[in-house]
Image (cartoon, rainbow, N blue to C red):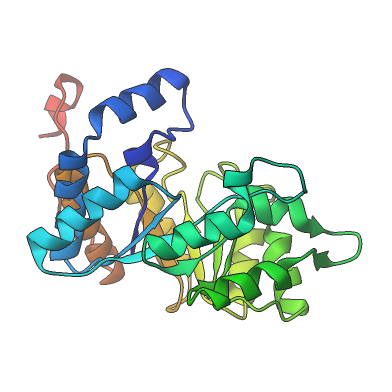
Length: 261
């Protein structure tokens, strides 16, 4: 399991109003409390864009628990000359290194812009992977296009892992879930799956049951939460699902369900 950060940084995939709510809610202290729950339970990796606000919370959680967090950072940067100097690849990759990234996976907006399906190549991926390794980080790629995984494997791209959309609702996925399942199972490298709950469109038990039961042992699930209780719940739920037990968590109560009690 990997800690996701959309519910920390305001990427709701719902509305601008929801994005603003998340950003107002998630102070450094609140994020550190959630991250500490994950660290205490052995979930010691976080996936995120570059954010000093989040980095401060990660350090607070590390200090509180006495445990280190692995940073999996997903930078975006200029692909063509003439862009903002602060967004040059060298600058952004240097920032990743300064933030302590172990893994550096150029974001989907980079990877998928470079993907050439007609010629079966990911343009310049070798250049960026070399730059990542020169900075002491492990390269991978983040994509919304399952072809990126297939082409990277076929061309022996110098990457060690992939980030791939995968959820039971097919949310944001470009082909059906069974096709993405096949791509994941055929990947030469471990796959970090993202958006297992389709940005809140699936119940946790539904979304997590699907991904945990259909990925390989070497693959991972990235899950974001808004509160410490949600973090505890999703960890306990996942452990039950992985042990093939019916989850025994307390259900929410409403008046319409009184007759089921």
